[in-house]
Length: 168
Image 1 (cartoon, one colour):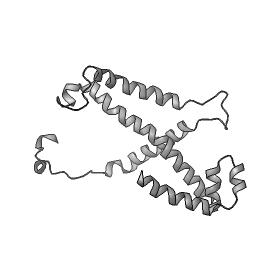
Image 2 (cartoon, helix red, strand yellow; image 1 turned 90 degrees about the vertical axis):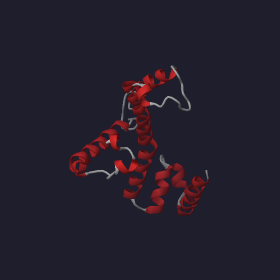
Image 3 (cartoon, helix red, strand yellow; image 1 turned 90 degrees about the horizontal axis):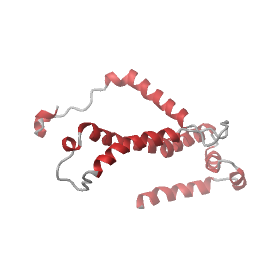
Image 4 (cartoon, one colour; image 1 turned 30 degrees about the vertical axis):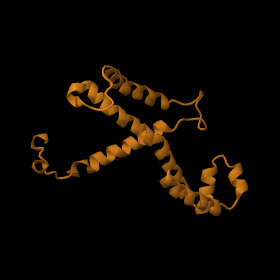
């Protein structure tokens, strides 16, 4: 909470002192973009900042849901007895199998429905841009994979020094 206050409070002060026309902010359909524009006087910077907000608040949470679902899928396919230690906190017993089976399915279903438009008929004003951003992000990832993927070697790990020689 302290970190949030120490970052948000100076940002709020900067936004308040940088704002030049409160009426324009109040009449704007996107007040945060109007404040950024008044401070920076640059549409490019405002566009970048708004894209950043979309990525941080809309795209990353979806990615986190996927990263929560992948280990659940691994437990279902490999088996809980193989992948988990026998004595562990929060052992759900037989209910753990249900959770591990349902988590990837529900994340897939919810992730699919999030991409649907909020209402029909779809227009530019009510379109859900999540699929557009996801396709663009997927294109960037594929581009990086084909241009830089083969050049990455990863960290050098001394498995013998760690006492994990059989884990390569």
